[in-house]
Image (cartoon, rainbow over all chains, first blue to last red; front, side, top):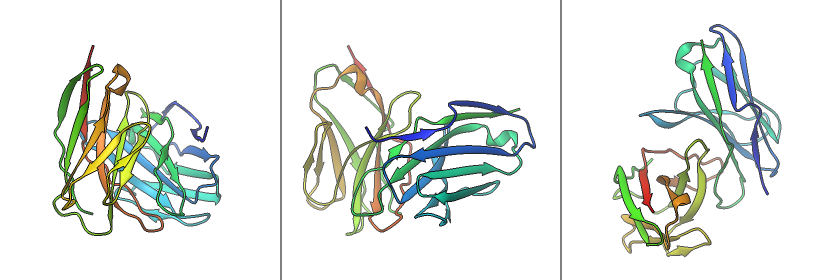
Length: 113
Length: 111
């Protein structure tokens, strides 16, 4: 069964900490995505990556950066965590060839205190 | 990106068919229609997608209007496990295309 694995299901961090959210996929997918989901705001795209070492800003990139050094891994970095970054973070991947659906991970619920 | 409009919520009874509507009057010729669903405490799950013709898979059917300005996701026999938020999304299928999620339809399935 194909998988997108997010390293943590729940995470609690302090304000000002640098936070790394890791996402790994085992499907050899070119495209990877980071979303956050908040009540009343739905899923919003933070960053995405077409392929290794490539990245594009999504709709809400402020306060975040990403790293894609290997094809299977896409990391989301909160440079200095703030309370307004408390959210559910969802990683997804899809092939860059042809038409296909996204595969999402189960999410990381991050709380910044 | 072209916008979609879905009802906020719908209810169905178990083992009955469910028709989830989606309007997308500004769809362009290159937009694919995607459906995803999100069960509680999980990430979204791909359901089905199509361009012009109706599509069937093991999860659902997608009926696309002839003018493509609307579509309907059909669950043939709803089960309690189908209770979820269903998202209808348009996406241009280019390399690195992205999905923009709206609010979706909350489907409740009654026993």
